[in-house]
Structure formats: structure tokens, C-alpha cells
Length: 501
Image (cartoon, rainbow, N blue to C red; front, side, top):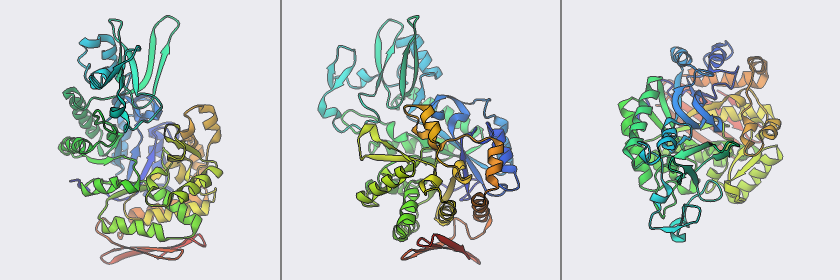
């Protein structure tokens, strides 16, 4: 079972890349020390480009050393000394092709100590398919018909061994093979790890020990549901193997005093959030961003209130958000909101400049809409403040995307410059310190910071509080009651106004 022992408790958490404001983490430390911001946050989620990484804005990790360019260990120490708890990423499913382990495989082939660290595709599917002329096994249809794919085609990369052979290895996510004019080959990509290999568990242990040494308190487990694999299975959220993996990781985390936050996108109807909660883990509230947009558009508080009631009655410990580095989740809403309403919301967000990502080109299997939250609300800064107020009164720990805090709008130019696969850059604009200081003068930013400081300091906002939620037509009322301390939000979704008492 998880324990809520993090320094940040349920206070607000800033969410940013280490270079999101001012170009490095030291500048973010300075930003947090500004009088306008000081006291608004009790923790910070620093995205993984603070490690040695090479693509996917940090999620292709070479190793978990702090890179020393846009982040240093002194920066992390400064945050801890300010009372800011740290949340850091650990990517269980894959490592970069530029990792020491993969480089060793390229150099030593079958003699590498890391030969089994990654997943040899042909060894995995042996006896369950036909060998192709290109040197990889094409699995028989009955073994692959239910498999979940993140991209078109089989998830393999042909890896050249020193003896001249090309051996297929499992590659769920990004890859690029570059044939140089001199006959050499360069790679980019994220190679899946073989969780059945003891050497992988040595890596897991070493990494969690290292992250604890940085002062991390919460570890976000990215892409963990892809890690357990078996022939004939979906190979995403395989059960019970996914939960067995998570339990084993928790055993390591417990030794280092770390709390785990498993990151997984699944539809409400599948109930995965409930399984996580029942096992004692914190749950990412990927439902709230879409629910608030739905409520503000429809003027109906019912769905928001029903979800808040479920969190409270079910004892679900959530980390919630409006926007984040990945945009606004919509796949998760399936089963919670009628599908035709989800499609209406997607079209609404697209009309406001959002980019839709479908899963490997399957239309109407929506995954997320890439947009800042302000742009998703049609650019109405009063609505942004109202949405923030609702988020901060919802049960759970609120996570705040830096660009939404500073009332950032969609950056379509960044998408155009980034080319194919650059849709996420719409919501990842790096700000200079001057940009951030200018934003701090905006009324909507001032109001958000007032709300955040209230959320961080008011004694009614406690893990032990009694939270009551009521919906009456367009009016949503949320009250936190903790002993002698009480605070109430009344949000009118018809007039798009709120008051706090």
C-alpha cells in the first residue's frame, strides 16, 4: 500500500521542463522565489529532460544522471531547501539506443552482457510465426490479432551485430535509422526492456536508488503498462503481469522511501483507475480536464459533481490537472461521457486551434488534443481562472502546467517548425524570464496565484478534510471541512463566475 508521506502533501505542484522558464532549472528556482509566486507551490514535477536524454523532449533516456546543462544537482538541492518536494520520472519500458546498455549490445552483439537487457524479437516469437526474408519472424495471426500497437507495422528495429547479422529487437515507440554516406549507421530510438531479465532489475534498483539520492519523493512511472509482454496478449496492461511488475517495483521504492505514481491512459469504462486505487496507488485524474471543458461548454455541473463524489466515496487518491506536456486527454473519457459528446468536444477543441492525435492513424480512436488550456477554453482568461478554481477545490493534489499558469496560448508556429510528429510543441513553448515576468502582471495570472496560495496555506485543505460536493443545475458547490476550518467554492457554470467563502 502507498503512504501519503510526501513533503508536498496535497498542496499545489508546479509542472515544467527544466528549461521551460528562463532556459534552465536555476531560473525556475528564481521564478519560484519571486514574491508573486512564493508560497504558491509545495512541490514540483520536473520533466525528464533534466537527465541525459536525446529525443521525445526527455522521454528517451540515455541514463539517469543529471545532465548538468539545463539542470544540476545544486538546483534540486535549492528546491528542497525551499520546501519544494520533488516528483521525477522513471521510464520502465524503454531506454535510448544511446544508452550504455544498447551501445554495448551494438559493440559486442551476442557476447554483450546486455544481450537479454532488450527484447530479441525472434527469440520472443520463436515457434509462433514464420521467418521472413528480411530476417524477422512474422507472428501468426492468432498471436497478434489482439496486440495493441502505438504505430503502424511491427514494433521492431533491425540491430546490426558485429558479425554482420541484423537482429530484430522490440521497439514500441520512436525509431530512426540513419545510413551514413561512409557506410556506417546511426540510430535514434527507444528500445523496450526485457523485464524477465535479472540485468533489467539491477537497472531498476540502481535507478530508484539514484532518484532517491536526488531527493525525489514521488516517482512517476511512465509507460509502465507496456513493459510486461507475452505472445498472444494485448501487450499493453497485460494482467496480472502489470500489477505484479508494479508490486515488485513498489518493493524497491519502499526501501528508498519513494511513493509511486503510475501513469496510464485507459478509458473510464475499463476501470483501470479503480484497480490502481484499490491497490493503494495514487491515480492520475485524466478525466478532470475534459470534464471541466464539458461543464463550461454545457453549463451543467452534473458530471463534474458525480466524478468528485466517486473520488470521495471511493477513497481515491488523485493527482489532478488542467493541462500538461501531453495536452488534454480525451480517450480516458470514454464510458464517462457519451461518445457523441466526446466527438463534439474534440471538434470544439479543434475549432479553437487544437491538434488531434489519433492512435496510429485510426480515426475516432482519439487519444488527446494538443492545446494549452486557455486556448481550449476559447482564449477566455476569466474561464481559465474559473477552471483553476474548480481544479483547486476538487479532491486530490493539483498539478499546474507552467504555460497554463502563465496564460499561454497555442503556439501553431512551433508545430509548423517541428514538422511531422511536432503537434505537442503547441503546448510546450519555452519562456524567457522576461516573458514570465510580463505574464505575472496579467490579471488572470494574479488571480490564479492567489488561488494557489490559498490552496497551499488554508488549513481546511487537508488530507483529513471532509469534502462535500453538490450540483444544482449549473451551480457546483464544493466544501472542505477540517475541524474548525471550512472553505467553500460556489461555481456557476451558466454565468461563468465563482465565489469562495
